[in-house]
Image 1 (cartoon, helix red, strand yellow):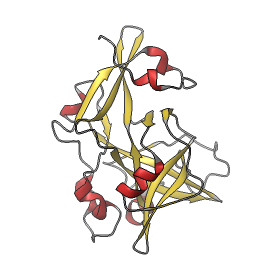
Image 2: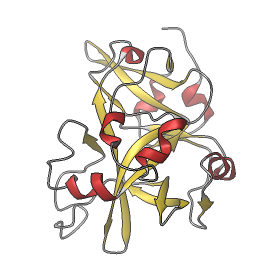
Image 3: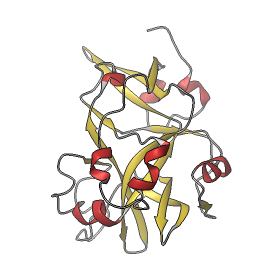
Amino acid sequence: MCGRFTITHPNEALAALFDALPGNDLPPVPRYNVCPTTPVAVVTSEGGARRLRAMRWGFIPGWYKTPADGPLIINARSDTVAVKPAFREAVRARRCIVPASGFFEWQTEGKAKLPWYFTRSDGAPLAFAGLWQRWGEIDTVAIVSTDAGPGMAGLHHREAVVLEARDWPLWLGEAGHGAAVLMKPSAEGVLRCHRVDVAVNSNRAEGAQLIAPILA
């Protein structure tokens, strides 16, 4: 977690929400099946100015000679992020936010993988805690994960760190030190979920029907 998400909110609305200057290269929306290695919109704060920028989802450590030189890194574990060579500098100096409208998680029943779709209960966009890294001329990002909280409903043992609006300045480095306390599960009631069709199991699938609820 997180391995697949959606972004259906307009880029202009996200830029306004995060008080960020939007870039010219943002991926078009809506996107109902955002997969690793594709471009995603990311909020950064540098010199007191926030930007909404495009980055490759898939963190590339500085020592990789090619993007495929090692494992695909889409998540960073909160419990090891401060000591892992790939992340320890980024967690101090290059924290960011990855906006999303929702995300998918899978429940295994026998040989079947049954997808569920998660959103915020209040309908607002999700703000995933992220870390970014420049590799050559490519900006890359990973989403921070932590132990699953009550909102995961027992579907998975990990979940993405979802930041509340009051905590955005601290995570982005605008409000001093102490961001480590934010790497925790979502509180009860923050997330809601419903079953969706197995069509989303294909990373080639796209369209609003992927998030339509079905009977479990």
